[in-house]
Image 1: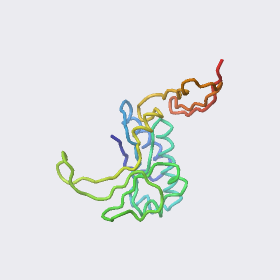
Image 2: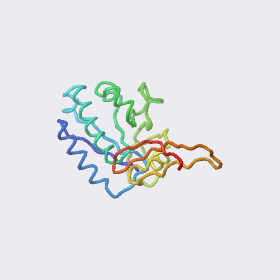
Image 3: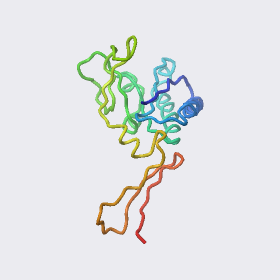
Image 4: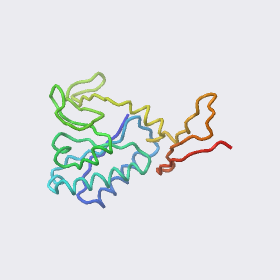
Length: 182
């Protein structure tokens, strides 16, 4: 299970407010897949790439700081024309490019929404996707998306090292450091 938020904001302040509303709705739930920002509003694209990218950053940074694995849902046009490269490199991408045998998008993406069709158990049409990343394993290992604080890595048996490096997230803040054997 994952989640997404359709953004209406036209300002960075409003993007942060919508992020806070999204965080409230996510609270108390667990998501094995990333939580995505869906930005499709033509009024936003009329703002231009710099402002659209600022909206994306404000929203994703806020949700990520709250302890979620975040990503951006977009089509070929929105990702290539309205999203700065640093965003596409930093966050998971869910690419919407329908009815092609393979995507023409040149960037990295973890999920490809390739068509609209039918799926067992769903009445009516639904989007069809391929996922190329084992998000559930990674999200749970990092303690994100409601799965709690990760446990420090366990050293191999008979390990004679006196130090280990650990990473963890506590209350949305990330910590990394070296622990020394005493």
